[in-house]
Length: 153
Image 1 (spheres, rainbow, N blue to C red):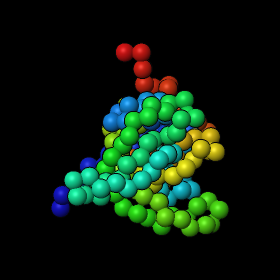
Image 2 (cartoon, rainbow, N blue to C red; image 1 turned 180 degrees about the vertical axis):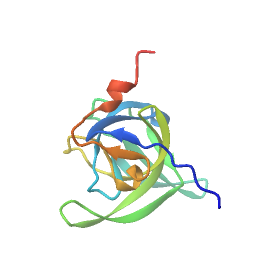
Image 3 (cartoon, rainbow, N blue to C red; image 1 turned 90 degrees about the vertical axis):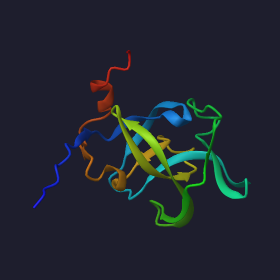
């Protein structure tokens, strides 16, 4: 019988920062939410376009009011539309995309629903599906990546 090697889980606090290099976004504040099933990211100008006969989802991460906003349009043909239940118990349909992100200096592919989070304190929410089998959440801590990753190099 072959046993799978267990991956060491990373300790993360209730808030931290992520990078999305493909979008040119770094040090984006995020909330770690073990009550949320899916991860979510704030977007603007979410629209469908036909490019070379294919449906392509186009969107801007963040919006012009956000200090990290860089007006870079993201495009992907790999997306799904999901029925999501909000924290208020309401249902809505959102697009879900996969993004390469860096958390605590490690690269992950993560699924995010695109949503309008302009009134939320954190533009990014990391939910249970992303955290599972990778992280242990220490609710007594915040922004652990700033303690362990030296960004000056």
